[in-house]
Amino acid sequence: MASPFAVIFDRDGVLNQDYGYAYDPDRLVWIPGAMAAIGRVNRAGGLVLVATNQSGIGRGYYSEAQMHGFHEEMRRQLAIGGAKIDAIYHCPFHEDAAEERYRQADHPDRKPNPGMILRGLADFAIAADRALMIGDKDSDMQAARAAGIDGYLFTGGDLEAFLLDAARRTGLPL
Image 1 (cartoon, helix red, strand yellow):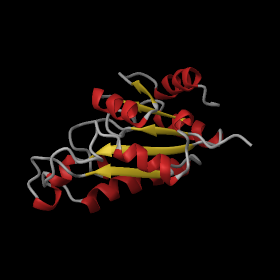
Image 2 (tube, rainbow, N blue to C red):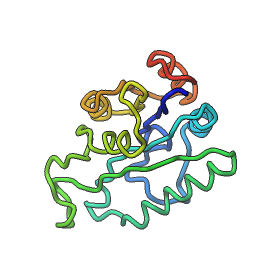
Image 3 (spheres, rainbow, N blue to C red):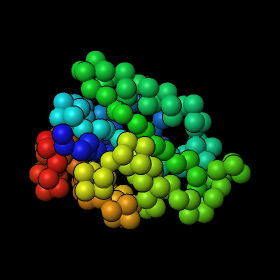
Image 4 (tube, rainbow, N blue to C red):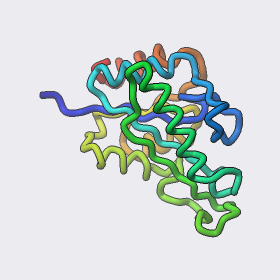
């Protein structure tokens, strides 16, 4: 049996439109092909993980509960089409956080650091050569490299088509 594989997605700008500190479930708008890309990974037997910096929590723009509500809406909409996200890792820490408990410079989970990716790989026993990351910022690519996985910079368009090309280049069975 083949070892498990995973696709790790950044959230804002990759899965959903980034309008600046996205947290309101009523304002969730999927990137074209995002729901199809998640469903494709699910059907191929892969895991879908999300690694997202969420400094808006630390900055006091919204709460962790509001972020979780946004994620629940994502999961609800995906479930309608038979798709799912296996785990979401978030990092509310930032050196300029308004809330003391979130104020930390260079937190190991905050991309470009690889903490969220490494935790996801460990939690699901995924080998680095059986994972890839799709992100829309250089910090996503830096985190992928630091975690020892292939990273692909998404600059827009259809996410499912982009994923298929990335998976082919990494050798994942999509």
